Length: 254
Image (cartoon, rainbow, N blue to C red):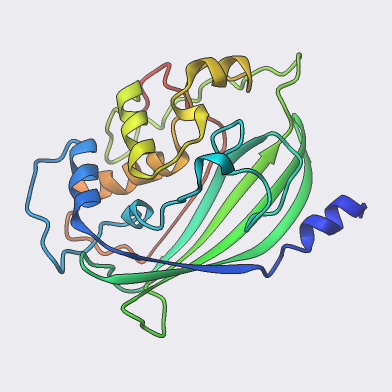
């Protein structure tokens, strides 16, 4: 294991805790963004699965932002020396409701750092464990593992993988048109400055992708939203997703 890999692994175990309050305005805003009819959001309303991403937003100063729109490397996350960063997947345990009005605390811990060789070169995976507690509770209401992947820059011979058709026999199906406005609104709601989601010149000319990239968390939220539309009273105990390939704004997806 080389010195750089040892340096990155030294971040394992680092932890930070941030606090927030589950205010109703973000819930109203995401309800509109996902095209649901407006409805009252009162204290005690349970958040739908994954809507906790509307809180604990990354409030970095403008001078702390890097060229890609993310915070500069270092700080809580390890300083991985690869230019492209994406959300690789997540795993969730929903243990108890998070409600509008709750005082919430999220404790985040670097759970693992691993290095691999992929089809397009070196990959570094950082796994972060998040525990969300409500109103000073001892036990977390939500446990989330967040997988981040760092990749090398686009190479001259790299070819984007072709689109993959959605299963045709799915019991529920919905078409999504990922236009610029949808991507911008979700970036704004999650205070996500990553330029791959809204800056077409940057994503195509600097990172080498063919179009704007649909947020992995937005796709996951849309999947949970499809369940909610079909089974509004369902209680979700766990959920996991893995980002296999980027989804671009060039076509509708199902």
